[in-house]
Amino acid sequence: VVVTQSPLSLPVTLGQPASISCRSNQSLLYSDGNTYLNWYQQRPGQSPRRLIYKVSTRDSGVPDRFSGSGSGTDFTLKISRVEAEDVGVYYCMQGTHTPFTFGPGTRVDIK
Amino acid sequence: QVQLVESGGGVAQPGRSLRLSCAASGFTFRSFSMHWVRQSPDKGLEWVAVIWPDGSQKQYGDSVKGRFTISRDNSKNTLYLQMNSLRGDDTAIYYCAKEIQVWGQGTLVTVS
Image (cartoon, rainbow over all chains, first blue to last red; front, side, top):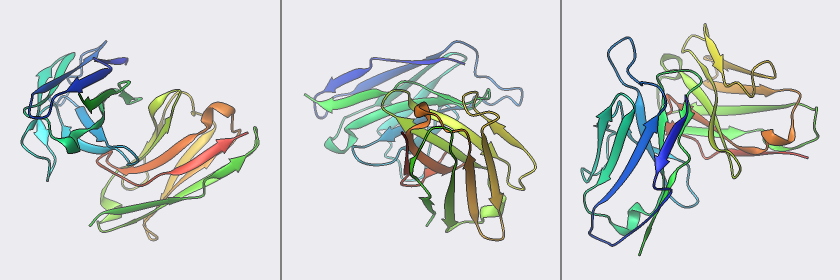
């Protein structure tokens, strides 16, 4: 399954919203009724950290300014108000079909 | 808290082997599936392999199938990745990850 993201680079103004799109070339709806689409944040010099799983469920400790939505082949990560600590690269990953696959990443930085 | 510490990376010649280890703590290791994921500037993040909690099932990415073997020792809370027939495009940081939720700090493998 090929996963694409857009944009690949996203300059944002502090306090403004940001949105990242993730698309797959096959439906990510699994036979158990779940859709295994995760979002990860990788800050500079750090390992990736999962933010959201199964499209829209935030991991523990993730600020509520992060939200995920979508279904089928089309998904979105939104940051309601960007803060300085949000700078980094964001990846979506599909875990429905093996081999699991990641998107190419979206680099978020501050204008 | 969950901690994953990878080791075993280094420089290897093409065609040679390396074995990575991942020491886990802070959770009930035997209850969770474990993954290896790698990251390189050329290919970005690439999922490598997964092993079921009891080790009964394993799955691999297409580029490593037949060359890499994932295993675990639940008595030692340790995950392994045996990498054989290494190639230049295996050069990457290798992360172990608990259910691709919590990741270790990674270990660098350079094939040259």
